Each structure stands twice: as C-alpha cells, then as structure tokens.
Length: 500
Ligand SMILES: *Cc1c(COP(=O)(O)O)cnc(C)c1O
Image (tube, rainbow, N blue to C red; front, side, top):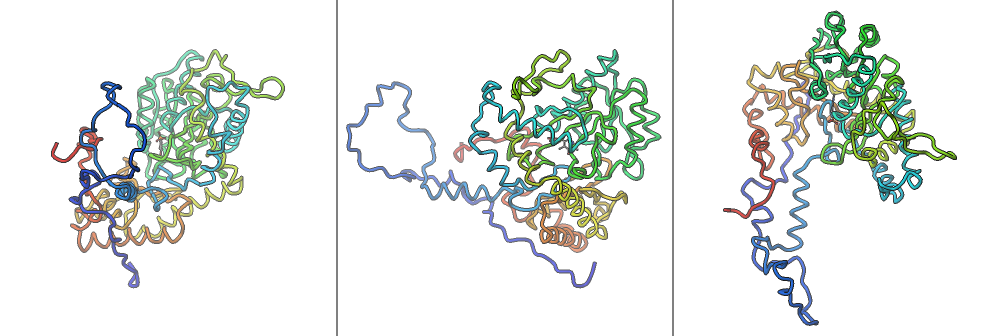
C-alpha cells in the first residue's frame, strides 16, 4: 500500500437506533391527518348497513400527515438501490434503469394496452415485440426467439424443455445434462426440474471448462451441456468452438446461460460460436428493473431446428401486412406464461437498445469490461485473485489473505455497508472458497469506482489492525447481522401493536 493513500471514514448514519419508536408506536388517540369542516348535512345512519361498518378499527394507529410522510420517506432511506449508489453484485448486472425506458413504457398506447385485446387492435404491441425479437436475434446471432419467460431461471427451463422436445422428436431425449462446477445454482435446478440427471463438469486451473474432462463425460446419453459464457468467474471460455463441436459430434445440444451477455453485446455472438439455445436476462443486460423494482424477462433464443417447439403463440405475418398470432404449432412445448410475457419489460428493453444504438451497445460492453478490470487492477495487491485469467465484465477475489485474521468474505461485505456501499456477491461462485464477486457494470462513474476501491482497501487495512471491527460490522445500520434462517422460516410480515 502506498504512503499517501487517504483513509475514508465510515459515513455518518441517518438511521435511527434500534430502540427509537417507529411510526405505529408514535400513535396517540386523536391525532389526525385531515381536519374536516363541521358537518353541514344530516348525518347518515350507518347502522342500516348492519355488520358492514365498524364503530372503530381496533388498534389502528392515529398519526398526523407529516408523521406519515416522514415514516415512508425514512423507510425509503433504509433501502439501497441502483438509484442510491453502486450495486456491485457479481453476476446480477445491477445497471442503471434509464429513465427514458420508463417514459416510453408509460406512453398511453403502450401502458394502457390490454392483453385480451384482439390482434387486430394490438398491432403496435405486436410490432414492438417483433422488432425487439429481431434486435435480440441480431445481438445473439440466433435464429428464432420467444419473449414469454418471466425470468432467467424460467428461460432456462423453457430452453431445456425445447432441447428435450427436439431430442425426443429424434427418438431419444437422453438422460443427463452436463453442468460445470462454476455454474449458477439455477442451472442444475433447471435440469433437475426438467427431469434430467445432473452431471458435474470440472473446471481447470484457468477457471474454464476442462475439455479433456468434457471429452470423457460427453457420452451418448447426455442431452446438453449448460454453459455460461463468460462464466461466473467472469472468464471467457476460449475453447468454446471446440466445446460446441465436441457436444454436437456426440449428438448433444449446447445451452448457454446468457445472464452474462453484458460482456458480449456488440462484440461476440453466441450463435456464431456454436450455441443452440440460450436465454437472455432483459433485467440484467438490457437495463429493465431488477429485483424488487419490477418483474423480470428471460427471452429464449434458438437455432432454426428448435423453432417448431417454441411456446405459443408465435407472432407471424398476417393478411395485408398486419401481424397475427399463430397458436397452431403442433410441436410446440405449449405456453410457459400467460399472454406474451412481461410486455412492459419488452418496451423498456427496446427503448434501451434503440437509445444506445449499435455503437452505444458496443461501448456499453467495453465500458463494463473496463470497469471490472479497473477494480481488479486496484484491488489485486490487497485481496487474493484465485484465477489469473483475464476478466471480462466481473472479477472474483477470495478472502484467503484475510482469513488469517479470522475475517471472512461475509464480514468484509458487511463492513462495506458501513462505508455506504451495497456489498458484492458473497461466496459465489462455489468453486472459489470465500468468493468476493464484483461486477461494477458500465453505469458506475469513475469517481464512484475510486470511492468503492478506497473503501475496499480501507477494509483490508482494518483487517490487519482491528479485525474485530470488521467481524462485528455493520455498525451504522438500524439492524446488524440478521438471523437469516429465522427471517426465512418465521417471517414477520405485518405490524402488530407493541405487547400483543
Ligand atoms: C441471474 C442469473 C440467473 C437467473 O436469472 P433470474 O432472472 O434471477 O432467474 C441464471 N444464471 C446466471 C449466471 C445468473 O447470473
């Protein structure tokens, strides 16, 4: 570490302490949010409505308008989102949700459309979905697409069902799916739910697929290899052509988990490197809101031979230049989602694509990769880098150097909260013990990256000088370390008056 490095101090907290009364406890009889003028009409006799009217609502809090405004405003400050600051969760691509997307999605003709409108009255929506499909096919190098799935994992399931349908039509759906040990947990879950046996594929010292191991395990009963590229170490699978050839030569299909497309858009196309079927996460790569911010969307793109199996309905040319919905697809796997999928997300993703344009999308990819490498470069002397292979859009460190002081990846993540940042992804991918996975995305301004790096470096110094400070973090939040198991098993979802 250099001499003249500045040491940022943890930001002062705006949060009230654990014991400070919340909204409902501030309730007092007679407090009102509104003051009505005296009654100047005869009072209605509500008793005629029988049991439908309560004399009073038991335990209903009584507060002024200002207190309510402060309550909700304060709650909003306890949250953290992409609009608050950098959200470097690796693999999640938490990028800026551009406001232009929201403006366009709220336009009357798009926002007020109803999925039960007949195709004749939904031509604009159908054209929009068709245009988005064409752009996504151009970006991925694939040949046909469905926009129906509502999430990445949902897209995975759709894609694997498509693969199974194709293989079954050839007389043998096969038994197993190969999944690298670095894969996202949804991959094996998808394969298992689709009825396949999951077989593990080892990674080599570079963190990529071991082609010799693939050669050994890619047998005639393997339906598909599910691969993420770049993989969850942020490493591009350089042998992808060889891998695709090997899988195809043995009669299998190559599925690509496209959650990491933010590293490829405008630079490389999965369709060109041998992928047969893949999903996209519009809520990651294409900037539609993610997590609590909105529903997801996981379109699945395929090569021609899988097209007959796509979910219905499919948008097709109709009479007189209009578009129509085709439900008559005998080989289709059927519907995977009501109507056409999450239409509002299609509008946002299309707005993102069109606002950026070809050159903008390419720039986005380059900036995402640059930012990840900037972070990697400025942290590699203080945190262990388990794989020296070049990083794409995210970088993965481990807590190896900090464990000597009894500090683990989860502790460092909690301490980051004290510095005002959302933590990175903790303990994933599983092949890295104590993983710290950082994906800044292209949205992070240079100044914020520097602040994040400074915080990470300050924590590394704290681990040396005062490890207990890090082990007991966070110190600035309303609640500290949650009992995550109890929160999941016995969630408290409703306020109850104190003492009841
Ligand atoms: C996010 C992610 C998924 C799952 O996507 P969801 O939309 O969360 O269901 C799958 N694989 C990878 C690599 C991911 O990062």
